[in-house]
Length: 554
Image 1 (cartoon, rainbow, N blue to C red):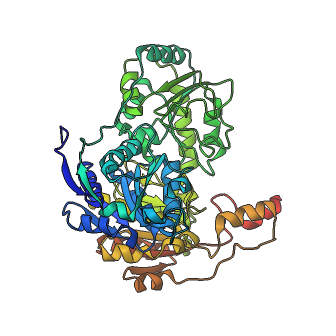
Image 2 (image 1 turned 180 degrees about the vertical axis):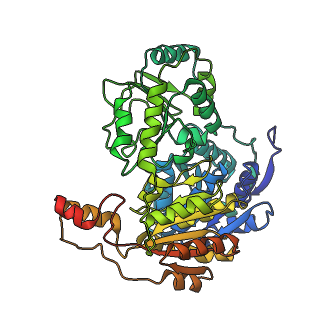
Image 3 (image 1 turned 120 degrees about the horizontal axis):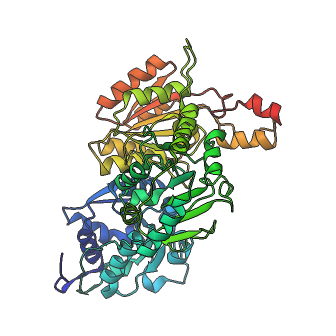
């Protein structure tokens, strides 16, 4: 649409659906509820929109979040009143911390029943106020187009994030004349010339510059521009927490990933840098290792689309409010001669020395190193990896090389239960790509029911389950702080292969590298979701430590 549409008479639900059409929404995730039946009915009448029904609202919200990351469009999810809203809150929080555009529609009790503790009543806009970019309850039906289109604008503008819209059930049936506006165009601010000139002055004095690239580069579709800038100026690049695919990991200027368990040699790179150029990252707690890796002795140039991000944790020498892609395009005009080739080579060498997979020779038992080695060997380079929270992810983060953009989807919020439904969402967004999720047994059991959703919609995701029969990350911290006093972290044994089959998916248990390789080869050819269970050694609690080693150190 290029002009304001003619005024049309329709009910609130139909107006919402018309807004979805204008915003090119083609997939909507939900668990159905009676509070928003008119909206479901309106979607039924709109052939361009497919409704994906999940088994749990938390799963639906993770699917919408994973879909948004993969498609670069807002994820849309719906649920009913306070109970459904509470269940999907984990996905809203994940979208907020991950800067993922999401629009959430929640059915609400009848307007006349508000304030009386009606059935499942919760003040939804206040309930989500702290974990959403914007919340609103629509009280006048003729304002539906205005507020819904505003929600899509807020979700995508500046630092992207989730918005929550509360819909009183009577509003959905009420009719009015509606006026619609064109599809939202995301604003893309860019640096001014004075800022580019100041950046040039800082870089001219640099001896050991370093780029920390974050999600803002990915959401702005600026990966190619980052690559061009780095090639021109030969500056090494580190990926912010769980943004591995922001820069090709096999590139000679890649310096590693800043996350949980980052090797000390890689962290030394950040501490030795004299100029840090942070692009599209909020310099989170994990990325900065508890806010410790940037010192006053280093010149920080911080570029972010959100002005509230600049100076929030580190005061920059130069702070620039800009879209990451637009900034990188402007930065190509900088005129300096790089004199830090040895520094760049040293940074890349450190990364390679710590990321080489160390497999046990002649070992019959399948190890986590074997798993990552075989994934690297067998998966196409454009395969998409998602992961849950858990120590098993340490092997992925340390050893798996992400060579292409848009190949990794992980929650910076550290949400358990994320891996499988996010993989389903990503596979729905990009049906021609292979999608593999990694989960621990604890996280998998939080959303395992969504295997049935994947089977029902013929979505052949591959789900790896690292089973050590415990909440491994918590057990590790428990042993570090209260050695041998194990409480609350042990779990029972589950046959995940059998469980998968009961949910209409494929399931296989692997104990050797040969079995795992065969399972992956079969799964990539299957037309059903597949669960591959991997039995972990409970003693090997992390990439670098066993439980016994933690106890002895204490």
